[in-house]
Length: 216
Image (tube, rainbow, N blue to C red; front, side, top):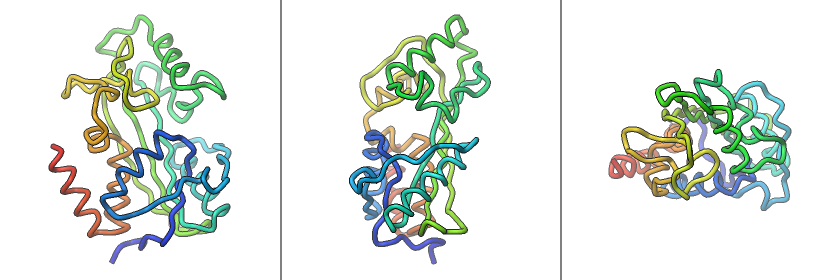
């Protein structure tokens, strides 16, 4: 039996179009449908947690309570070794509260100016949470990690966030140069979501795993 049988309706606690697009693409083969919170008139939760998992739970509870539905939320970010793990939980607002992807990438490049290529190691982290209802005492939690190196200039036009600066040495490409299918197979978010699917719906997990293997 699955740990948490999926509810008939699931709200995605995100107003980030890139995240919504990626998560929809990953859930579609499993037959799990979601509705983004902004389509229900739900605003963003205050991210007052000190860790990725705390913020993910805050966002999921906020969306579940406002919608009356089960909720999926993630909190993701980039950890750069040379910056002692920054920008971390502040990744989306690294250049300021109203900053966009371009501003965040520009600040990251400025912070790493003069840092040698062999000292620019980094990873994307994703903590993803599923709640059956707003007061669910046992949230389902999954984590994905994607290792890479920060470039000294953007490459590629796909993806979002820090993707143009995130280099995957084994592929000889940035995350922004990958097609959507390949990125979803490899990414921190894809890893975490497949873990959730495996516990929500084992038969759907088999489909997701098989498709991931085909991509390899």
